[in-house]
Image 1 (cartoon, helix red, strand yellow):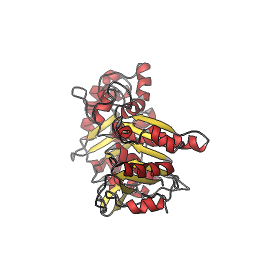
Image 2: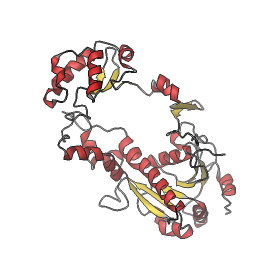
Image 3: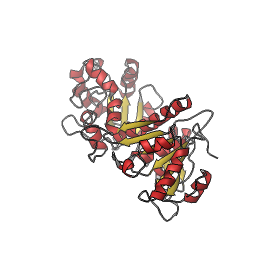
Image 4: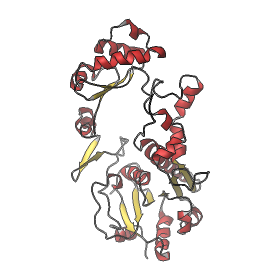
Amino acid sequence: MAQGPLAGVKIVEFAGIGPGPFCGMLLSDMGADVIRIDRPGNGKPGRAEDVVGRGRRSIGLNLKDPADVEVALKLIAQADALIEGFRPGVMERNGLGPDVALARNPKLVYGRMTGWGQTGALSHSAGHDLNYIAITGALHAMGDGDGRPRPPLNLVGDYGGGALYLAMGVLAAIINVKNGGKGQVIDVAMSDGAASLTAMFWGMRAMGVWTDDREANMLDGGAHFYDTYETKDGKWISLGSIEPQFYAILREKAGLTDAAYDAQMDRSKWPELKKKVMAAIKTKTQAEWNEIMEGTDICYAPVLSMADAPTYKHNVDRGTFVEIEGVVQPAPAPRFSETPGAIQGRPPGLGEHTEAILKDWGVSR
């Protein structure tokens, strides 16, 4: 029996790559019954390493076969929401577009996610996370001051601007339906979402406190009090001492006694002060700085590798990571006091649960 705040919510997910499966994982972790429509497979269990595929069941359907398309429509007729990540027009060509689906189920939330959106000059072009964030100003803002923009993994476009916005949109539309509204289509463009994520910086730019020069701003590594620094043993720490009271503790704990540090917000002094901080941090190991700075209001944390993060005390205390069948992975987030989420199961193989899904959802071929 599923648990979590979305227990009882039924989601049809059309198999895809990247942000689509991640959105399905998030909804499943919160208790939704997410069934994934895959191409027909051998029905064998999936690989435990497919972390973002966890927690749902798989039904194998050939969407080029009208009979299987009809099965998909029968499932859609019972679903609260559908999520898909194909290029514009693919679902329509398969006979599963919004008009057909909403005719079967007027209360359906039809979630569509692509890099560029369903409309616009680039809507039919191929792309990846890096391209989607490139047109928003976000990518240009990240990287070395005297070098090239740096890809921030695929967290800003695929996952931040895509999967999370799809999950939020689906849940908002489901609430609207529960309040008497109609089903509707959600058009999630990762480029739109990435642009939305930069809202604060557009505000800062309008106030004249953000420039288009990399490593020249407070939050992009330009400031000596907000950056990462290499330690004596070749590891790294992070400092985020923005507020004056936190900056004062940083100066005390790191021995930054030079009067030059008094001009914290004087941007002209940042390059010089950064060199001084670099030299100071290089005098001790990461473990030594942990001993001095952890637990204070410096706004400090060691920069941990993925190998080290699961055993870090704070993460252990909160159960931030779990291990399933030997695979370490993030636990469900966020946390709910009354209806805690949970990983509902291992990643499915293609079509592994076809017959069980048909039976549970009351659908016949």
